[in-house]
Length: 455
Ligand code: GDP
Ligand code: ZN
Image 1 (cartoon, rainbow, N blue to C red):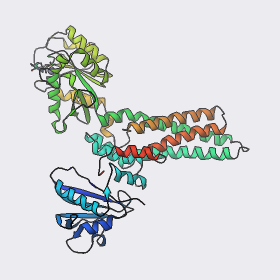
Image 2 (cartoon, helix red, strand yellow; image 1 turned 180 degrees about the vertical axis):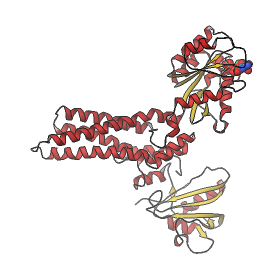
Image 3 (cartoon, helix red, strand yellow; image 1 turned 60 degrees about the horizontal axis):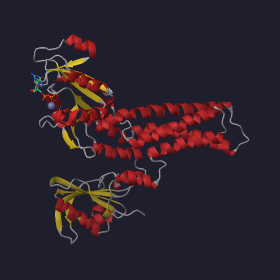
Image 4 (cartoon, protein in one colour; image 1 turned 45 degrees about the vertical axis):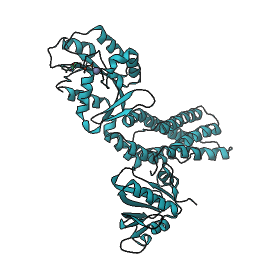
C-alpha cells in the first residue's frame, strides 16, 4: 500500500498563486481535516474535479488562507491515485504552513518527480511520456516545448509500441518453436518473421535518426561566431539578440568556465559560446586567444564566420576561415555592407558559395541570415513529439536496433531458433527499457530523481 505524499508544486517566491499537491490513499481524509469548504460539509462529499472555495487550516487548526481546493479521485487522476490540489495565495509562509498541516495528518514530503513516478507505476503514462513531463517543464524554446507535449500526448510512444508489438510477435512465435523442437519452423512463417524483423529494423533506424535533430531542438544548436578582431562579431551577436529579444537568457556554464548566450532565431535556439566575444568586456575573444576559440569551434555544430567586407581579406581572416572549415556547418557572413566594399563580392561568392552580406550596424541583411539558420534546422519547426530528445531513450533504441539486426542475421543464416530468440528478446528488452514496460526498479528511481519536487 503506497503512502500519501505532499509537496509545494510552485516556486517558493511571493506570487499570486501557490499550489500544494497531495496524492495517495489518505488524500480525502487529510483534505477534509485541513480544508473546510465555505458552503459547509467535507470536500470529499462535494463534486469531484471541481474547485471549491474554503479555508485552509494550519497544524493547530487556525485559518491560514482562503483557498481553492480540488479533489481528483483515482484511478482517473494524474497519478492514478486520489489526488488533490490546494490553490493558495502564493506566499511561501502560507505554503509552508499548509504543507506542514498535511504532514501533521500523516502525509510525507514527496521526492523529486514522485507524482509522475506514481503516474508511471500506475500505468497512467509510459516512461517516454513521463520523461516528456520533465522535458516540457524544462523546454527552452517553443519548438522544444511543442515536441515535448507531443511526446506527452503519446506520439513517440505509439511508434515505439508498434515496434514493440512486432518484436513481441517474433519472440512468442520463437518460444513456440523452441518449446516444440520437433516441429520445424515452416518457410512461410520464417519469411513472415524475417519481414517483421526487417520492418522493426527500419523503424528503429528511422527513430534513432531523429535523435540528433531532437537534441539540437532540446538543447539548442552549439554555435560559435568566428572572425578576426573588428570583423564585427560582437555587433552581429547584438543584432541577433535584437532579432528576437523575447527569449534570451544568460546561463553561466557550470562545467566549463565559459558563458553561453542563448539566442532564439525563429524556431532555432542557438547556444553561442563566449569565445566569440560574447562578454564584450574589452573583447574577450582577442584576450582569450586562439586556443579557446579552437576549443569552442571543436564543440560547435554551426560556425558563423564573419568577414569584414569593407577590407581585403588578411592572414587573420584565413585563420578564422580555416577554423570555421572544421565545424560541421558554416554560414559565411560578409559584414559592413553599409561601407564601401573592400573586397569583390563575386570573388567571395566564388570561393565560399552562398554568402550572407549584411550590416550588423544597421541590421540590414540580418533577417536573411536568420532565415538561413532556420533553413539549416528544419526538423524542429514541425516536430510534435516524434523526435527522440533524450540520451537514455536513444541508447535504448540503439541497443534494440543492434539486437534486431543480429536476430535477423541469425534467422537468415539458418541458426537454431534459440539463437534468434535470444537476440529478439534482447531487442524487446531494450525497447521495454525505453517505454518502461520492462525496466529495473533502480533505473526508474534514477530517472525520476532528476525531476523537481512537486512534479
Ligand atoms: P569584433 O571584434 O569582431 O567583435 O567586432 P565588433 O563587433 O566589436 O566591431 C568592430 C568595429 O566595427 C566596431 O567599431 C563596430 O562599431 C564596427 N562595426 C561592426 N559591424 C559594423 C557594420 O556593419 N558597419 C559598420 N560601419 N561598422 C561596423
Ligand atoms: Zn568582439
